[in-house]
Image (cartoon, rainbow, N blue to C red; front, side, top):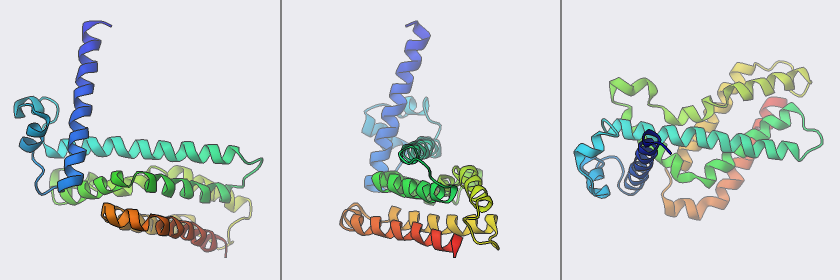
Length: 217
């Protein structure tokens, strides 16, 4: 390994350590007491050193969100693909519904990530410079838009959906319900989530079943 590659590897390692510490601080204390000074103290480094990696708190939070969203979407698509491949044939509608099953299951497996995104959204929503990018929760479903829209269009061609259905309107309704569900889950405390996890699994199964009725009845 040459010197440049080595230093780049060490820089990425340090950034990962910073983001890991920031995640823990945000989950434990929220955004009100989260500062660059406290984060530097937690890492036992100087604030000057911390600013070499991230220019401010918003930069740290954006980096956390930028790690969470692609990972969750990738895990969702990977899990969904495995399930689809286990069937000899699965229709576009069933693929659509299974995609949301996989998505909700990944959310329940990584609830802390969802809570972090809600904290970040709350903190950044009143900052004009990043206001347009502040809705990190919505990015969860936005990144699946192309896939879900194509599946519904294919399902419509297959005759699986009700004839009068408006695809854009239907997707908007489904995403609104999905976002509301994500917000509810993300706002639960760790204790509440642990107590309600089984009920939440039943709840998201019922939501996906409702999507089926909404699209076909």
